[in-house]
Amino acid sequence: MRANTWAGRNKVKVRDVPDPRLLNDRDAVVRITSTAICGSDLHLVDGYVPTMQDGDVMGHEFMGEVIEVGRGVDPGRLRVGDRVVVPFPIACGACGACAADLYSCCENSNPNAGIAEKMFGHPVAGIFGYSHLTGGFAGGQAQYARVPFADVGPLKIESDLTDEQVLFLSDILPTGYMGAEMCDIQPTDVVAVWGAGPVGQFAMDSARVLGAAKVIAIDKEPYRLQMAERAGHTTVNFEEVDVRSRLLELTGGRGPDKCIDAVGMEASHGSMPLYAYDRVKQAVRSETERPHALRQAILSCRSGGIVSVIGVYGGFLDKFPAGAWMNRALTLRTGQCHVQRYMKPLLERIERGEIDPTRVITHTLPLDEAERGFEIFKNKRENCEKVVLKP
Image: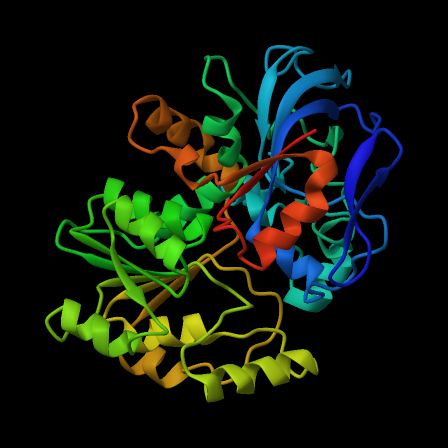
């Protein structure tokens, strides 16, 4: 089959790889009809997530048709011919974490748990197409994919909604929604979102759906800010104004009630000295993150507020403002998204027209043009917000 693979730092390559097959009684094989390029894929391409190997199949946002199921899969839950969206965390459904709906912390799905323990202290769940740190599972930027624990993860789509309307239930829509949900939004709340990429856009939409009085989008790319503005959100360009000062102006001097970091480890910053400091340290691997957005969110949030972190961080950051966090009674909430928890409720919101996932799609390309898709997405060319690939 054809698949988009990691080919070294700053390089992906579409090539022929072996077809997947059932390895476990609870596996399924899915023929992929739509997949996507995620912002967190760039962390792999840029070399900031360790343990990638040449030829690893990338991608963790995909959906398609079930063409084969293991004999241990309950036919009442999944059958050949079902149309499914596959969540990016692989979860067993039976461990303590899964029982608590903490699917991205599954204790059984990562065969390389020992590697993850060295990095994070405890293992994390297996993730499709996201390094050997998270299990070395082949991803979904391909024609076919093997899906472990297929009786737990995939969500059947039984309506006539298009792929584009439901594809992002695999990751970025639940991730954005969880970021907003962790904020415990009240009707008077002002919510500021750092990052107007796809996850940030969905965090903004979710904050509004959950009742926020005002949502503020923070970014530097005009087309991203325009997209947020068209959706009804207030915008702040961090290259034009001091973010904290502008947020104080917009909130009567108090700061946002809730702040969401939808950026993560490769953040930019309006201040060149601050950007250069972290960029150099990251380049020489003396820190793994550029945490500008996280620092700024903590320093901007009103005292007693909540900072929700859904941007991906991989290791160790520098100059964390622990004093502001502790002394001002801030609450930090974080996590890789527990996608399985949110898929059905969000599908219902899509069906009711409360959220339109298609609004972030700017490019649809054949799988064989994945290299071009990565190039324009990474470098923000052609006003690229989200790339959908068609195998």
